[in-house]
Amino acid sequence: MKSLHKLRAYLFQAWIAGNTILDTPTPEPIKIQTLPLPPGISSNNTGSCTQEINPNYSGCMVLEKSFQGGGFFPDGKHVLAVVRYTGAPEAPHPGSEYTGDQLIIVKTDGGNFSSGDPWKCVTCGIPPSNAQGVNTLRDYPQAFRDGKRVLLGSNIVDCGRHDIVSDACTADNVRMYPIHFSNRVDGSGPGAPLRELRLHPDNVHLGFNSFVLEGASVVGQYAYYSRLQFNPSPTSGLPLAPRYDLVNVTLLVDAKGKQQYETRGSELIINPDALSVGELRGFSADGAEVIYIGAQTESSNTDIYAAHLDTGKVRRLTSHPGYCDPVDMSPDNDWMVIADTRASTRMSWAAAMRNVPPVVDPAVTLITTGLRNNGARRFFQPFLLDRHGDRGTYVGQQINAAGDSVPGGGAYNDPEWNTQADPKWSPDSTQIVYYQVQTTSPECGGANPLPCYASTEPYGRRVRLLLATLTSRAPAKRAAVTFSGDVVPWGTPYVPGASVRAPAMLRSGTYTLYGKKGGSASVRVRRPDDVQISDIFVSAAYSNFTDDGATFLNGEEWGEQRVSGDTARIVWFVNLTQEGAVAAKKVSSVEGLRVDIERFVVTGWEGEFTTTVDGEVYRVPRSGT
Image (cartoon, rainbow, N blue to C red; front, side, top):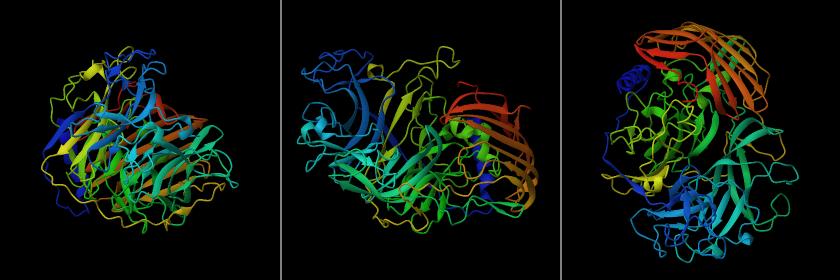
């Protein structure tokens, strides 16, 4: 806790220069409760979900992982989730339809459905004819405002004229339609793969991300904005079944505007306000801004940004050196909930030294984005921030701060229970639903030096769905949608079959980067051109470099990334000293930190890497932890 207090003081020193402090909200009372889920069992054997375990024959779920909490239903009294059912009896025995990954809806008011359960499976038992050609991706469930449809991964679940929460919405009435993103000139084929889909507040447009593939290897990812259009009888592309097509697609790349890295002769210029959409995470409640993970403003510090869909104006929403990824804007557009590592010092070894320009980041970003996790374990906890985000010493309010925080104790702030993506707001902006997963093997136990703990949840479940109520708040009205157009002026119109143009990159050469308030850095870059993920070497030697006039950076660092198919080996050497308003050092072992990555997942690392800020020491975690 002492190190977190010191870090907060340093945040203020690093931020204050050149900024105007807005009023910050005071902490508010928050009540958390656990929402009910189907019984959990450890056996996958057919029929192991017995009547004794579930007298209503409404299924049993697996105990760990394979679960995802979703958003609220429009009535504010139900939330969505994806569970993996197991142990169902053979057909035609009652309950045989409760198997595999399914969409459920859970009551938040303590009531039950007519079945006697507080949950209802929406997709269990759908006839195959009602779900032709559906995609396997079933995550991030988000309800449409009509109460009759749900975005489920890259599919849309539709109950026709019936509300999904009603008894009339039975399996026979449910349809599931795949979403199709055409990527060929003639419209043939299954289309490009989609991931991290987010509904626009107008419920007509959709934001999503898609990997760029060369063969079977991932060489990049881009974000898109599109219109959903129902196609009852497609004549090209797969599947040739009723589906939703994505039309009027815009690639969220500003190819003509200011770029993050620009050169003017031998001078390197870094533009922190450039449009650089890394991964789309959602939209503001009025639909005017796209919310995304952006290119680093400060080295090693991954943050959330907002860009206006019409004007392209960029706002940095988070700046804490923790890693932020999941985010949801409140329906009244005044608040956000994020999931972030800032409740710990997980990322301080890399990001605690502030005001370091992101020079070597093109070579080492996969390290910082990878080591935020330990395998399947996340280190996220939920935080409440106002719409302006981090500033000064204001870094939001931890939603689940109350509790004894004893590892394995099962409190809502137990560090062994980590929040997952995405926490979501209720329609009236008074509640937040989120879910947690307990650390399990191989991220603990066995050869891993970290201990595993028994679950204190019912049935020994390793997942839990939580409802946070902001008890002092009155219900707020939803913000009116102010942007609902098909055209994003700064974006690039997407043409199926055309190669996706990469934004301008840091190219090979020798450059000088000048500090805004003094000093400079000598920069060397070696890389192939126009390849988003590739071999790259970047070095920087700093001489009294300062952007704020208060902290002065000296020393050198370099990063090298070598890519082979879906694997990468990255080496990061650093020996930096910062003086002035703060005394900080950032040092690696002589050989550098050596990290192995496969498909964006860190598989192991070796070497030392330490950041010291005003005497507080932060070390890179041990490999495997």
